[in-house]
Length: 511
Figure 1 (spheres, rainbow, N blue to C red):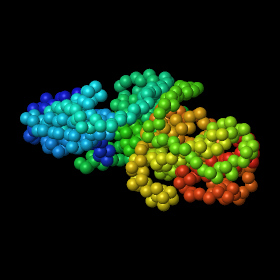
Figure 2 (cartoon, one colour):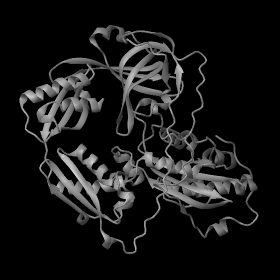
Figure 3 (cartoon, rainbow, N blue to C red):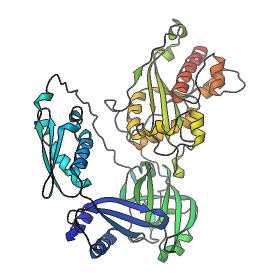
């Protein structure tokens, strides 16, 4: 649809080389704002024509505005952009291409560039074309160029082999809609996507479920126009999700009659907002989840072959020679592998049904093999949102630290690989931490097996203490640590788990 829109925009003479800079949804007044960039002068008539074209591509429930700006880059801007693009296009090249290796010249219609590389051969064959294509997306004008050989760079250069995981796409599951009937739509839908699998953007996706919550508010635009906005939380037994909806005037009375407990079918558009999928309904009809519905087991992506972002490190602690006395460890500990983990998060909301589930900001995990702590997996995670002062004060983790960290999309595949084939262990993890791991792994297509031991319940069954908080149990065993940091909490939990196994001499019940 984007290609069709920009192609039609370019039929306007002054916008023949225009690019689409951005498309923004201003929810406060139900407006879609489209920004175009051109390298030629344009008139008020051209702007009016662009608005007319844009109106055809924007859903009628939203108003539409178009902004046009003129941008002609200079050679310095183009060279800087090429340097930034190279790591995205060819990682091997990025290791030894500097700003001095990029030459840019202005031409009659645009720019010509050369990138000096080691052996301009097969591994650079498509680099110039890909750079040109990306430049055309960012700037107006024509771009062409090539890679040229810089022989002086050949001395003692070794290109490290890059291991890449095979990319798998697991299709979302769907079920037959029962008892479909129209409320306001014009298309009879037969199948609905599992809400639990709704982790992708789409122009049109159908979901079906029972209303568990309704919120209504009036939105007033800058022009004074009032519109009714609804927020429906629906559940299809696989998960719950909150869906926004702007009511049409012709169907407002029907929508007002909807109530908690009604089963509806929503035709939605899904967008990514601050790292979360946010669906907006275009049409609402009636329909039900089939009676006796049993969700299919979701297929997991296979375990990644390589770590890509977070690499486990060996854990060495010479005190383990005292901690693990020969023949004192039961076989249930030495014959199994465990990953003891802890998380720090932006808050306590571990349910995605509210539409505002909290985010992971730190993962700390330690692997126990043969009865000894052997490996650690520690990383900060970018939550793509602002940390509260309460969380900063509690954990000591500041905004700058997480802003520079990888997002969960980068971290969870590596963590899934780290925990694969292992029992999970955590303190109060069954009711809290594991929910975050399960949800954010599933958002990346990975289905962790729920094999978890909780040291909170384990210590309650073995010890007699005033309470069973992590620091209280640690004090009982004489273990000191820095509380409320994931890596420290995970390490002390690993030591506690080993001590509890030594006392009980068997594994506790799975949670």
